[in-house]
Length: 408
Length: 44
Image (cartoon, rainbow over all chains, first blue to last red):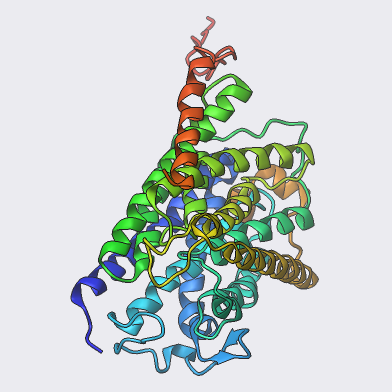
């Protein structure tokens, strides 16, 4: 197999774009919390970038993409990147070095547990966060990645379509966030005291950087620098813009004012929803997917508020529900006119694809709920998940890290 | 037009036309953002 320099350059550049998304997420979340917790919130993302980068080369990549075992998990043959060299792997990307594919996938593994951190912001003990993230990446992310993307994975064999991680990244993190919010409980004063974003500009900047990095996430998932990457790039931008417009319109109608933070959250919801569909739908499908994301994710936040769940930064509503809508919509709008190696969806004559997508959605929800609940309970046996009340009042920047964010 | 295009057009019309019925300005009164600029009284 011959290495294509254009494909390799694109995938490596895309890996760098996706890497940027994790600190961007830190700023997106950081602006939404109170001033006393901003540094700890940014630290969640920065720390996970370091932690999973090492976990991935040691054993994560092998579990997710290594030689298949029972269609459920990769074997340990590739631990420490053994057998993962510079020759292309035809099962995954036949025109780029195997290590280029590995490092691109690493960035997906990095951002996924970082997404969950928004649910337990402002109250989780840092040591518990470290243990949880390592166990979650190993026992929840790696198996689901193998099911969907690994050669021999059971959802892969079933024909589930997930171009860049609607099930693997967003449903897994969003649903796990809901479980984490329920297990940890609400923040002190939740529902009584106002907990307003301390820096909306930081959040909007974070959202813009996420949008920028997401071109690597989705268009990079083509793994070639050609027509499929171009199509994924265009539909990603279209769905994102449509979701931001829709969210802003719905919230403008509902709350009587056009929210800036709402527009930013809407853009992220659109990015999430188009992720599984990016390599399978045309631009008209992207408009419908973006519109749907703006509506359903906004409604999910209203529901979350009504049932008083303290998913602090709405990870479940945006990523869990947005990812679910995107995975379902892939089964509706996929067309082989865009990707001849995939399948048509319901509106192109293949209703069976919707059922396959529902199986993938159900499996991702189920494993995320079971795995996250078990891991949180296990960690709690050794390290209390929450900080003490006085530490929460003081703020996590000082109580967990001994550093204030601002010396103003 | 195929069904996907029809749906995309309907979604776009809903959003764009929706702006015609939305309020012209924010309903909420602006809040006092900071009290730092209040003059400091220095008594003799």
